[in-house]
Structures are given as C-alpha cells and as structure tokens.
Length: 242
Length: 211
Image 1 (cartoon, chains in turn brown, orange):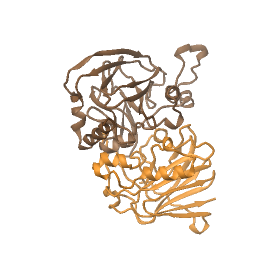
Image 2 (cartoon, rainbow over the protein chains, first blue to last red):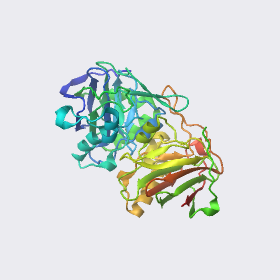
Image 3 (spheres, chains in turn purple, yellow):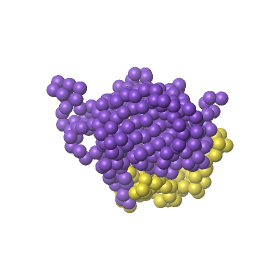
Image 4 (cartoon, chains in turn cyan, blue):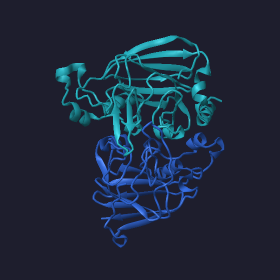
C-alpha cells in the first residue's frame, strides 16, 4: 500500500553499515525512509518522544490497538501515552517483526563465536543490546529504557501451537519502509541480524537512511483512516501541539 | 494445553494475600521460594511485572523470554528471562495452560485509542503500576515495561493477526513460579471495564508464597 502524495526533496542520506548504530530526532512532519540495500537486512528500532523521553515505543499497545502481530503500511507505532511516534506510510516488504528483540553479548558469542576487536577491528561482533544502550546513553537514557524493539525487514510467524518460525527472504535488495513522524521522535536503531536468523555466520547487512520533508500532512491519510483507533491516536498526538 | 498441577498445600504457605478487584499489589519473593497466583472467580487478568530485588533495573524481558523458548505463549516449563539475560523465574505449575505476554497493560492513554476518547478518566493497570511503584520508591515510570497477563488468552494467527479470545481460565485456576533470584513482584489486578475478556467484571485474585 502506498500513500500517494508528493514529497519534498530529499533532505539528507546516509548509509548505516552492517553492525552500525545511530540515533537522531526525526522532526514533526519529516519522513524517514529505511532501505535494505543488499537484501536480508534487519534493523532493530526504538522510538521515543524527543521532548519527554520517558514516553517510549510501546509495542504491546501498538499491536493490541490495531489487532495485529505484524506491522506494515497503514499501521502506527504508538507510545505508552497513546500517541503516534511514527506512522508506516509505505512498506514494500509487508511484515516487520515484534517478537525477536535483540541479542546481548553472551548470546552473540554463543551463536557466532568470538569476534574480537583485536583481530577484526571494526568488523568485530557487535550485539543489539550494547548497540542500542550506547546510542541511548548519548541521550542520557539507560537500561530502564531498553524496551521491546521492532525488527524491521524481518518476518517471524507463529504456528497453531504457538511456535515461532523465522521466514527467510522477507526483504530483498531495494525493499524499504517509510516512517512519518507526527511528533518530534527520537529514533534509535542498529543494523544487525535478526536473533532468529538461522545463518550461523555473523554477517549484518547495511541499510540506507533517507530524510524527506513532507509537504502535506495528507501523507498520513492511509494510517489515520486505516482503523478508527488510529484516528484517535492522531488526535492524541495533535493535542501535544495545541 | 499443557496443564501441570502442584503438590503444594495452601495451609503450608508462608505468605498469603488477596488482591481486591482493580487494585495494585507489590510483594517480594526470595530465591528458591514459589509464588502462586490464583484466579479466584475466573477470567481475571493479573497483569504482572518482575524485577530483581538487588538491582531493580534488571527486569522481566518479554522478547528474550519468547525467543529462548521459541514460543509465543507462557505455560508450565517456561523460563522467564531478564533484560540482562538471567533466568528470573520458572513456571512450575499451571492449571490454566496459556498466559499472554504480548498484550501489555491497559492505560488511560491506550484506552482512549482502543475504545473511545471519553474512556480517559477510567481506572487502568498502568495507573496501578505507577501507584505501587511510586509508593515503594524503587521503581518509576521508566521501569514499567511489557508485562505478563496471567490467565489471559491472546492467540496469534499464522497470518499475523492478534485476537482476543474468551478466557480459558476459571475460578480456582492457578499458576506457580519458582524464583531463581530475589524478586520484586508488581501486580495490577486489572480494572478494565471495556473488554469482554473478563465479562466486564473485574474480580479478586489471591497470592500465596511457599518456602
């Protein structure tokens, strides 16, 4: 699904290498496109209210209020305060995972073996917990703020017994997701393999970040009207700016 | 459903309490002790969070717990892991068979999204979590993360749908957890009045602890 509205020119572009991490404020009215450059990427994502950082992405609320366990175009990413931190305005991939979370250092070592800086330099084996904590620390956040993260580009299904199945090839080269920010949203992310990715080799993929200015709020129409809940979520968000 | 009964007798419990309908509750269990949560009247959501008593920044981690058991529901045998990767508790008995850990807790703010804007001033679980946390002083808003909803049934479909089914719990159903470390237990006995899961009727729950 695609919302059809002209975007302004690209504001900025940057590539996050596999294993990299970054954080920034996506300002109200801006849109971030995240592109899987090579295929098979995974981005572990956290979102917070940039003005009041105790307000954070709440995946249970996001899933529950939209009656979905997968996130894709038309869905909103909710904070714990009933506001929309970002709306998924476009998605060529179709499924983004809320179950898998991130590995810590011990879990990475258990899965991939030792990958030390001494030998590998900046190719050393990183882990999602440390990468996200490092970025959050830059905004004076800590372990208490490391909540359930969203794993972009990854698909994990649940069978009738409740068991998980990681679906390979969910994302191909060029697949992308667009996140529109109806409020000033602090974005924290790292590009690392999904914890359930069966590939035994540590081989995180790069992603491209593209900032766009949205000329009209009409870009959100898809998300605002996809469910009555989301109309109320946008109402709550706009209340921040009265 | 994987149903596992307990051999423990309530007379031998070293601690017992009843959480009135809609109320917050906080207690501690020590490493080696067993905690039982009992659904007294049936289909009551017992929204629960666990913290390490020695370091309250260490807490229950839903994504690690689900990933390590490769399963989306909790039942007997499930190990509850912390955000530092440590086992916190193991579910040792369960006569309900399935517990939700994906749906989170209700809040004034999420009620406005889920139900209607004018539900804002109704009572909620996250208000309960905050009240208990701020009275106790060791926990604050930033420590409130995704919780377990004991006795709730929230199936995920193979297509990625999230459904809320009628409860599978009933009066007298219980779940028991053995603690691997000293634990702070934070509970909201859910006051939700907008959801058919509890027939719009919040009821009391019982807590028992054995050495």
